[in-house]
Length: 127
Ligand SMILES: [Cu+2]
Image (cartoon, rainbow, N blue to C red; front, side, top):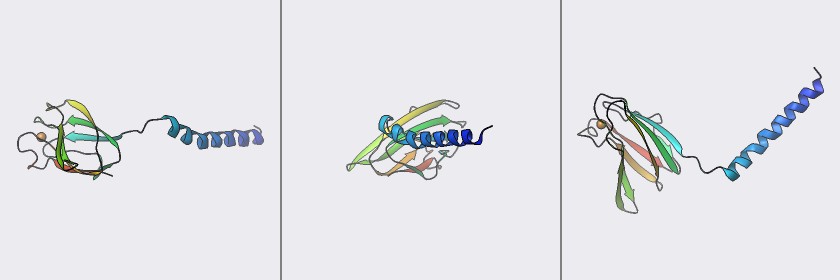
């Protein structure tokens, strides 16, 4: 094969790689941060510790335990109490919860029974 042809193809690919990010920024909406949580006894089962995000967060929640569990997010927005929760999930059930929160530290926990006190609790930092 001709050496010059290989060089030409490589530089064309390099140009494409440089051109693509700026194009993506112009057209693509801000992508939410994906956080996977496998709820179980007695953990929130995050794939990110500590949980940090900027902008929208998409929680992919699964009950990987033997008891019912849910995901709740609690904090203060503008000095007022804020709380949101998924439905209570049976073992094996999955759901998603998407939130866009102002910068701050929030508590993520399981609102079922005394699960929070048993360890189903974590911090979520929105930068
Ligand atoms: Cu629970």
